[in-house]
Length: 262
Image (cartoon, rainbow, N blue to C red; front, side, top):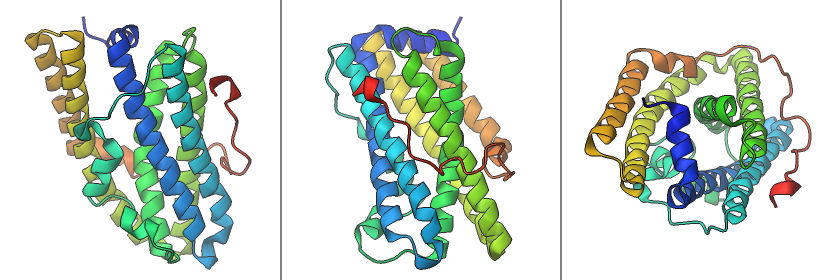
């Protein structure tokens, strides 16, 4: 029987599939670190108090990238090229989600609307990340090789999501509520399409590496399409709701280091 735990265990047990998984994850996290660092540098004067939190967010993403790379080294593996069709962050940018890299490369201050765009994009993508890492934490928190990494990254993703809720609610109270909801909806609807396409591409690659039979690959693809159908019909709404987080000021301190993964 197919299960999330069994599927990831199969990927974990094979060097080639594990290298692909970690390389994809490390590349996405490193890109997120760069984006947050640039946003922190370009924050408008009216939002300067937000800059340290954005910097912390970027530092966490950089840390995650280093952790995935260290997990490869621990297995004696090297990073592998990331197939373009599996590059989640690049495909989101191409879909017009978040702040364009061309914009971030210019040394021009961002606007408050740009900050709304950034936070809405982060709220949607951190929802996905928190859910995925929560699933890995459920099944692999005590794993001798990856358990520590899974627990650390999952806790960070929960903090990132709490931070997005808190800051978007603050901006909504300041009069940006309609823009926030409009941007969140557009981000969520685009993200679920990109997530579907990336999931199909990753599973296709993994199937070839692991020698899955055509029937098994077809079942997995059908499951991915079923998840997309659910999200398109209304599941996307979980990505746009806003509520006060249990943990306030989740990114208000220095990032936790990960020296054991260095």
